[in-house]
Image (spheres, rainbow, N blue to C red):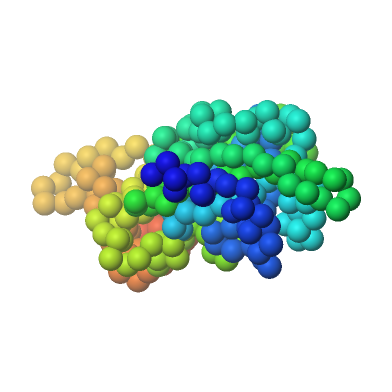
Length: 262
């Protein structure tokens, strides 16, 4: 095991990675990332979750993603990425300890600067899809009084090409996981995420409804819960997952209002 870890974080490995012709689902180049800053930390956590959910991979910091120019990392970034424990402590809020990265730094030759320091973050493969464990919120740089949402608790991200994208349909989970590994746990995570969205939408949209005294009729909260279950079943049956909530939920909620008012 120790030999495998050493090889995964070796100087030879990072030299091979930076010679790759392009970014992929398992390889991401970053010019810089300062995980002491909220925006960088949240975006970095999103990429780590996406990569872990897509079979694992490597993030190289200190290389421009378009030109492959080796710019190196600053002393501040080097200090923030000094070891795996420091990085995983910063990620724990969003990864919940389900994804723990490995970290190494290497100095490599550079024709312009002589030598530059790069950071290598090795992201392990998650055994099952890991959703965000907390909301990814940062101050809006254009208006510090406002908050900018990067992702929400329960969102599941995967790599699609060289991008980290949110899962909108269950098929997206197949991007990084063999179909044999996608079972009850994966379905449960997706269902929970959409259930939370639907429940939040309903709680903010529908006023409290008193139970109907008429025997044999369903109304009030039982009716809403039944319609919620129907909406989720419809999403999976027709493979339509609007975000945050789209036609299926709106149709169901419209039917709910009609039934209640009737």
